Length: 348
Ligand SMILES: Nc1ncnc2c1ncn2[C@@H]1O[C@H](COP(=O)(O)OP(=O)(O)OP(=O)(O)O)[C@@H](O)[C@H]1O
Ligand SMILES: [Mg+2]
Image 1 (spheres, rainbow, N blue to C red):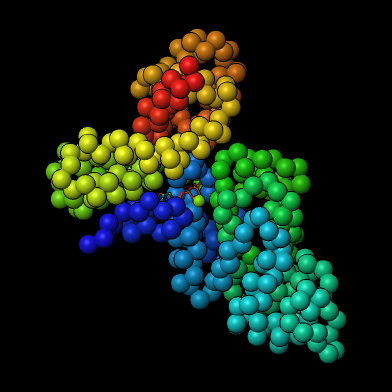
Image 2: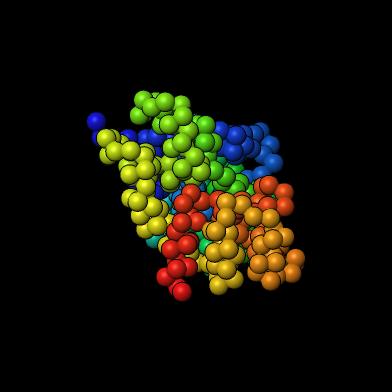
């Protein structure tokens, strides 16, 4: 049998631990008769499962005939991208043709007799959506890894107008906290500020343990020990499973060096490289203890309490530290303390 675990990012893994409540929250909101929101943003650290969650929601909605789903690439022109994709969907194509919509100015189809060609992108999308609405369907647009770029800004402001016109367009985006943050704080896009955000937290260690237990036929204690080693971090769950499968005869301790190696190469190097010097100082201090009192950390780093709260909040929102225990702070990712210690040693 092939290894049931995967090291690939962005694909539905065979061993999948569902995030029932958050997934249901989005699906229920979007499928509601009168949705309270037509946009959701999924954020979380690298490897926390944003792409997987976005895809599984799109797949689920796609099962429903009422929904059309389209994935757009946020590094390209999104209005044109959306129009061309919609134009290529067969049943929609028929709708547009019957409605005598002329998009020839954009290279979509040929010019039609007796109809005025549409020459504005926003108008094009709007007229397409009106037909979609008439046919009783809803459109879900997904966008993975958004950043605050011009394309995304233009798309978001058009989206805002379409919402005002009560058109059935829904938007599901994923992004790193800092990118989502910068987008929603853009003055032109204030509606995103109120848009609901889902922050991906670790998977349940119990669910992970029970998965390992059934795959590896190990004791409850052993499966719990393995789950603890992942701290619920989705990528780590796959890596540890992958290695334990590959080296069936080895003890857990023996696979740890390779486990560290994958975590480092696939995510930790990137995360570390994106931290500012001050963030690194905080993280380095945290790597020496399992958890630390915020007050003690502040004293060690010589920071006042408002400075500290900036770092604490930001690192918390990015998914690097755990601040859920009042007055305490600790590193959230598995074996990240070990990785950070190595980095600090290299710098000295
Ligand atoms: N619910 C889940 N259950 C089990 N494994 C998961 C789950 N979600 C994600 N994973 C695994 O975690 C890894 C990362 O998932 P994904 O690619 O969705 O992360 P991401 O947040 O999009 O990361 P990035 O920011 O780098 O794009 C993959 O190996 C995937 O198989
Ligand atoms: Mg991703």
